[in-house]
Length: 110
Length: 111
Image (tube, rainbow over all chains, first blue to last red; front, top):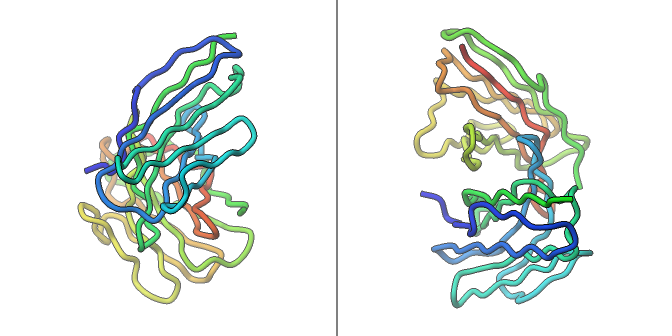
């Protein structure tokens, strides 16, 4: 079964607003990553957070990780129409294999 | 990062035929992976392609259906054999550096 579960499954916001996406997982991890996929194309790696980290920033992205709750959140600030995509969280254990969540479809309205 | 290319980018195939997908990376990597993404679904790992040894398959995937080659540290192929419409998916290769980087995917439609 899938390790990660994102919520919401779909999110629609206005350009300029912030988008928050959540991911929960079931087993212990080495790290958690967020990917973006545009229109069924390849995945773009956004950010990686290690199990001993609690928060990480990259440009307009902010990721948090709560290992006690086995959850992570991805915040995109000041969203743009170009942020419209599917977002996946993926967890990795000791074997480096990635287990993906079901994904969140984000629509940013101009 | 890594620059990864896949061929073909898309194909339409008849049931019962086979398709070989190529994955090329810009420099040597130890670990390469193949994933499947069925329509509207998330990614599922098919196998880990090991250079110089047999690929390691995940539960539900077998070598006869998805034979994999890994002749060197920059190249791998995945063959989808004896295709049926249920094999219609996007197939993606990835490589592990400091994290996993993905190729652009091969969109396969089986009629």
